[in-house]
Length: 181
Image (cartoon, rainbow, N blue to C red; front, side, top):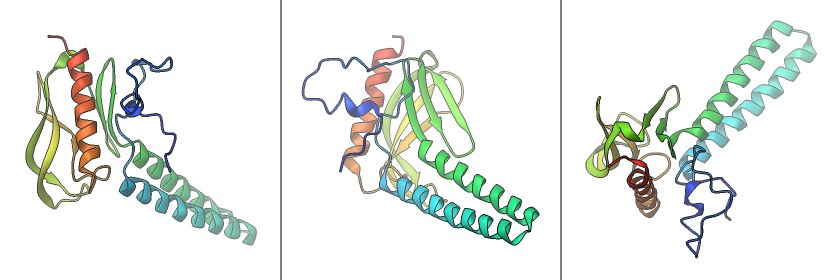
């Protein structure tokens, strides 16, 4: 069942190479679909938030407004974390490349990048401290340390090697098109 997410690979899947009228390269877009691990984790957090909101209603009906307020705040934080988890990943536009993490976002302009390439290196498994040998899409910056955008063992590409290859190729193509020579 295809989900209608706005992703940069929509034009990649097209049978003809005609530019789509809504294909605006100034908007930030993810060059791949969110992976099943990321979507499942966000869905579980939203399910937990619904139970906390139900508890909020019950506590408010019992008359303890301070407890209901605390539960509502907890539910709002859990919902915000779930939505942020869905936004995590690599985003591209004509302006540069962006890596969105849970608490931090790093944006690098295309003119500040010297290379975008896939390398073999130890990568984190689902973002946990455990590392395994895998592939990473690395952005080499003119100033600063290299930035690992994607790995084949993160929540978007675990057990989806083809999707990682397509996403890496797509980001490399954006880099080749918009990076100054």
